[in-house]
Length: 75
Image 1 (cartoon, rainbow, N blue to C red):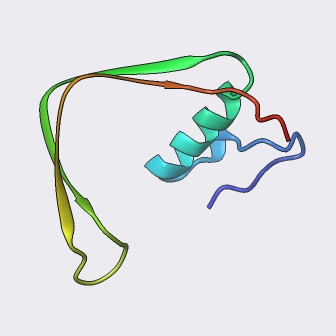
Image 2 (cartoon, helix red, strand yellow):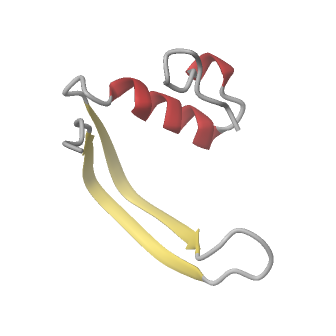
């Protein structure tokens, strides 16, 4: 997995998988008031319950808009 660089953030240029790229993009957008919007039309996916052999699947149907926003946590 891509490691955090000297800035404490993940580097999307070094991402080698789709999940690593998603983490790096989310990390870059956090604290900037950014939003990512995805539009789906009758998309159906089977989501595995676990990684590895013999997972169970949940069938998801997505039809509409999904918006993901980021913000800094008050720790």
